[in-house]
Image 1 (tube, helix red, strand yellow):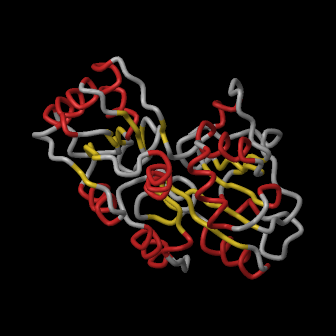
Image 2 (cartoon, helix red, strand yellow; image 1 turned 90 degrees about the vertical axis):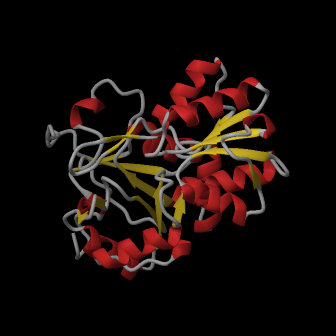
Amino acid sequence: MMQASPAALRRPTRLFGGYVFDLDGTLYLGETLLPGAAETVLAIRDHGARVAFLTNKPLERSADYAAKLADLGIPADADDVVSSTDALLRYLRVHAAGARILAVSEPLVEELLHEAGFETVPLGRPERADLVVVSWDRTFDYAKLVAAFRAVRAGARLVATNPDPFCPMPGGDLPDCAAMLAAIEASTGIRAQAIVGKPSVHMAGALLERLALPPDDTLLVGDRLETDVRMAHEAGMASALVLTGATAAAALLDSPVTPNYVLRGVADVLPRSHPSA
């Protein structure tokens, strides 16, 4: 990955009341903790700031993400983690109460829908669906595409968990939710009425409700300009881009989205004057 010039790097000069950390590419990559991540989160908590963790990845429960963080050396509870599935359920409770849902997803999303009281329909009965929920799905195949196509063509609305085209992985990036959604939109000619993960207002709302702090005293730290940084700015939070994940330094040159801070890695989120920096 191309390194940013020293002139491009901008480190915070103050401490914030709240810190929100993206996971993949920011705190860890795959199963490997990134340098300084655990020490930095500990130092922020010792300062008395609130910490939350944020992910567009809809493949695990919040408790599972918290357990992974704890195993890597960052203590966390399920309530500390906000995912795109939290934003999805928040959106559906308001905009789709009582809807019958066809889930183009891995089993977890359908489990969460059932637990939240939503009825799901099988792939073989797509015409019964009022809504199609599309998520990152590593089991996506032609049968699922056909079911979603028929449901949407019969009048079902379309909602997706997250807009990410790929997810950075140590062994090579993997296609993410946007790839599944693009296939359904292209075949039906219908666009999703909402994509609820970062950078949407639905994800920002779920996060700020959980953090219970004013946006202007909150710093969001992530590795993507179009999701992490954009959402921070649109929600009134400060943003810090780390160059350890999906975004290379060269992307800053022509991006319409400009982070408040640019960091080599998460350890640089603390001001130089901080004892742990």
